[in-house]
Length: 567
Picture 1 (cartoon, rainbow, N blue to C red):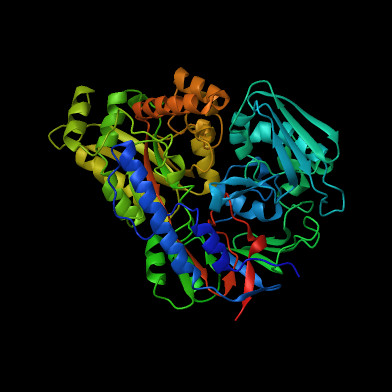
Picture 2: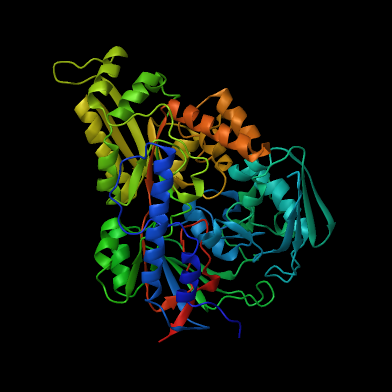
């Protein structure tokens, strides 16, 4: 029987390197200097180490094979093969059965790990040639996974449907397959950031023999809503819309690396309070940070048999983007956008919406220990200042009438989550004091995607995003060529210099990158199209399981190591 670290061993190893945020953080003021940022990050790191040590003492049982692990998720997917989608809820359901080339170690600043399809890699000194050697593996239909599958995926899926991969492979020259187990990716220009994008989140390898006839019309493939030929640790057994998806162990996963669990179930529970109640009742075993309310996590701290973790967002802080659409007539005036941002009490939002688990960020780069080398405070910042906001709207021609109404009516299109409701209602209240009317439209994921990212029909919307690798991955948030992509450039910014820097930053040496990132932060903040609410959401898990992900958010969750503990 293969050996695994128990949770205590895993946590102790992680504690040596993880940068943590510890318990509830109500320090919501943004850091003012690079020195302060570094100190904040060190304090977070120490708090995280202490939290890990305390949490590690909870789960000490021995690992065993078998059992069922039930994870609460907030809604149905729009597709089950989401190699073609960046939708978080789609990825919840897809990642357990998908396979990537590399994994990344959350305990070592996301260092690449050869625990997936690639058994080794070599990145040339000039950052233009990346070679993967593949281990022997097979699809669930018995066909071998080969370099041709990787080439097919990169050229036909990643390059067409994944915004992050499109950005990283802008200068792709060729993908070569010298043999069935070797893939060589050649660039025409260097990209030192390329190595960070081969997790299954960015590049889920697909079987060419199944998908080759559907790359232009992938919705027509039978595998689109019923994937049967996959390469990941779990195999889809059944999906019941509105209720659950059940997966069983892939006995042939990577030649002996099969999961401990017999079954993995994703249970659909839309209500965040009900999610916490289900965990307490033993109906689920993990309530992910994207699916449970902060109030419920605080309540569950006192419930026996459940551990609430405040850690897990140290490297990939969740950032709520509050974005204003520059393409809308009223928002084309920068002074109007600045006024609307200044009218929002951002620190109050952190307390109200995130229960104090976060801080205001005036930079698009979150204040984490992983980014202290490149994060700077922008020259233009727009803190809460309702008096200046009123003056700016006056100057822009939106003067208040005798009733305080400025005749400025805006529409927010947001998801049907509790966080989005609280956030939009709080902003509506702040803007009402300024004399601005905000209409709130809450939609499910599919309808919101259509209205926001296809029609671009909104004045304000939110994105729950993050930064886990190089900041160059965020080109899709700010570059003009992403305005036709899902979740792409929500502020509808058109700035040639921003486009230019994102296009070239990966080709530069480290010092030049730092200078370019500093310029980018100034440029992006100066557009006044986004405000960033950095938060570190807690999650809650049943104590009789070990090996669960240290950071069980969508991008890096891996349930192949989860095990039921002998008590």
